[in-house]
Length: 499
Image (tube, rainbow, N blue to C red; front, side, top):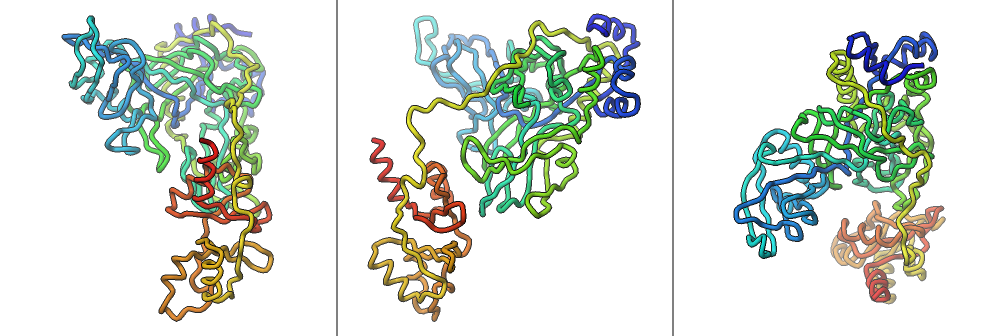
């Protein structure tokens, strides 16, 4: 048994034995947890990934004459910042996007620019009061002009993070990156063996007040993170630190393609090896670290679990999904996580970083609950047109034209003998086929069809219609059979009923 105070004294004397989590795995394998607990004093960890809940509190100081930006508008490099604080305080979130550059530049990039010492344009509007008469200001600032610049991230360092794949027949652009159709790839986040919370899953040494590596400087765990759900192995932490001391190598603004902006944050936590149990969990290898592979092709809160996977499988670069082997790509950088763990190790060995005991343990009983919704979510099956008319691929174009004209609609699904979708034609397809010599539906139909599922929320279908510039989609059941059609007219009627 050791105490944090005893380990700190060894750090001061330069006698502490500090190893990274990767090294600890090998020590535990070779010598066992009991011997590792006697030999090792501290295990260092690291992670470097997009942490979308990140942001920074900034204080600009007062202008002359003074202006009350609180309740007004604040823009940093044309990125909206929060104006609901006091006169010249703001919070800029990493996912706020530029009004002019869109997803190419956002709050995460502003934070990185500040840390790099770059000038940032500040534009603000107030509404004028007796004590704050000024209504507009436009200036430039650097991080050195700010009184305080505080990185505060309400949710970071998930204990484990679900992996992602996509069962749909179209590419999806998500916070888990680009997901190819029909289980074409898998993406994941997290540092596996180096992941901080995974090294101490019982939170015996990690809690409020724990000193950590944050963005290249020393920071602290401020509280449990939002969506903290330890019962499912989904613990999170809120962290805080002085942005003025940080290094842009460990804070990088990013754009997730067709999703939005974020901030890559480097974070590491030292694990004091107090006893054999802490040594055992700190030395767990990646074959024992498991997470779920979720199907992001189902746009629901509870996405289906495709299978359970280990981090050893994920980091191998390929895993089996169903009956095929698919490529796996990480969204976080293991190389940077390793660098963070080694940097923290050197700090401790040099006596530049002492451990701190938590002033309060992280709760182990929190449950992550979904948003309360007072109205049910309309599903496709409740809105779609059920009297669907279909044709086979050998149907003549003339007959398809007659059906469309007679029934007064624009979408005609093409199905095989089992009523499984093979294509779709529209009145536009028929109009453009005139004079081409084509006679069969199979010659003009669109074979790669955007579809909807019966149990899909209508909001996600509306998104597909907008994204693909189409006015309707066939609806399929779980067997892939056509059971209806959902059109923009159906959605318009739904909106009318809501009003």
